[in-house]
Length: 235
Image (tube, rainbow, N blue to C red; front, side, top):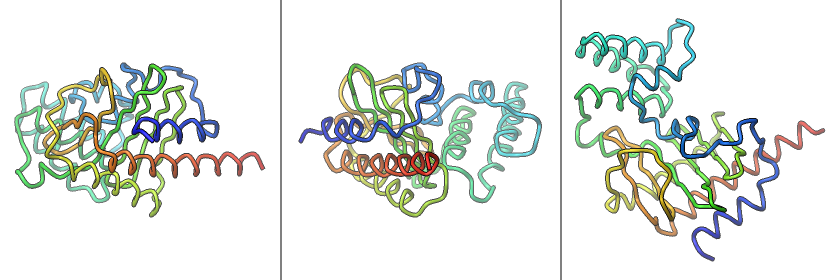
């Protein structure tokens, strides 16, 4: 069975349990939800998309750092961003956004930590659109089906976390094939896997079967859980 076919078979057999959101363009090229999977937006763009009420938290600190950067206080902004990284149990995507901001302000991670893969995003062509699956080191995951349906997984779960880390490891193992990625536009053709690191994004076109299989395992488990949850609600 071909690479795309494996992904398609799982999606088509399990798609019905997914919750279909009101916005039909989820997963499209300009969808901010999809763009957020890469956690690479400039500080000003990220802050514009946040709904903040002034309460303390990592996003408020990022917003404050953005304000300092706009005022030309670069070193103060970087110091504030670094303080976010010291917070315990920080979500992976927040780490990535912070490092995106630090790079924007001229700071780079050291070579070793910069190469660590904190998350991966796979994009698979499907019926003139794309399925997108993202997995993060903290065990959170996102699946955007080409139909506009979606699953958002944030609950701590050992099984999902293990599948996320397996997907990440399989992608990182072929990292030598990756090249820098500078935008989050959908692929022009074929499957792409993007490695999310402190140093930026790196894309692998046409990833090997091992990566497709790891991604499929995660997607199938997420769909199974979504189906179970729907059945519980129905009862």
